[in-house]
Structures are given as structure tokens and as C-alpha cells.
Length: 184
Image 1 (cartoon, helix red, strand yellow):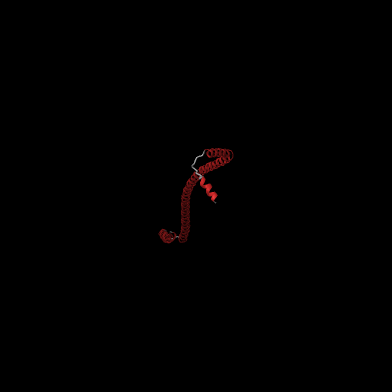
Image 2: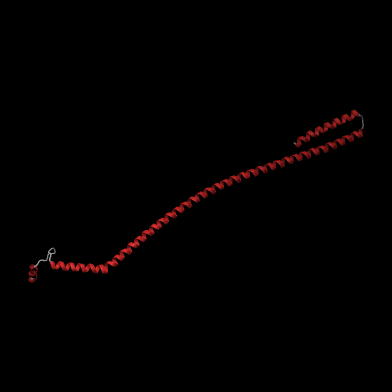
């Protein structure tokens, strides 16, 4: 142990102490190490860094393309949505117009059917009235014939004929008032 202490006491190493021999060999080792690194280590490291940089650039380019594609698709969807809204509005307007037209057509049809029904009823009433008048005429003729038959059977005189005709007309008037009240 004494020997080690003596050797250590003799020379104390100092890092900042410059000696020409140590500096020369340090420089030679540094140049040799730089050459070995440049020859064998730097190309793969730089290749890896370039490949990584290229992958990052490709990822950025892909992201940019995807963003542009997304923006384009979003704009297309907005346009389609707007078109769908316009079509829906148009369909609603057409539906309303169709419903209004159908309602008007139904009203026109109902009115025309109502008018046809009224016209048929008027014609039916007119026909029944004509039949009633015709029936009254037939009855009047029959009554007149019956009265004439009485006149012919009795053949009295002109005063008697007038009296019979007057009675007959009164009986017809009475019968007509009774029937006309029933016809109306």
C-alpha cells in the first residue's frame, strides 16, 4: 500500500494539463473515430433519419389530402342536404297544391251533382205536376161528359141547363180546391 501511495504522490494527473504527446494521440483517435463513424455509422443513421423524414412528409401529405377530401365530401353533403330540403319543400308545396286542387275538384263535383239532383227533382216535380194536371183534365172531361150525359137525359130547358152547368162548375171548383190543396 505504501507503494501505491508513493506512486500516487509522485505524479498527480491533471486533465487540464496539456501535454503534446497526449494531445497528439487524442487528435489522431478523434480523426480515426470520425472517419469510422462517417464510413460505417453515419450512412445508416442518416438513411434512417431521411426515411423517417420521408414517412413524416408522406403522412403529412396524406393527412392534407384526406382533409381536402373530407372538406370536399362535407361540401357535397351540404349541397345534397340543401337539395333534399328544396325537394322536400317542393314536394310539400306540390302536395298542398294537389290537395287544394282535389278539394276544389271535389267541391265542383259536389256542386254539379247537387245541381243535377236539383234539376232531376225539378223535372220530377214538373212531370208529376203535368201528370196531375193531365189527371185533372181527364177527370174534368169525365165529369163534363157525365154532366153532359145528365143534361141529355133530362133535357129540360135552357134555364135548367144553365143551372145544372153552374152546379157542375161549383162542384168541380169545390173538388178542385180540395185536390189542389192535396197536390201542393
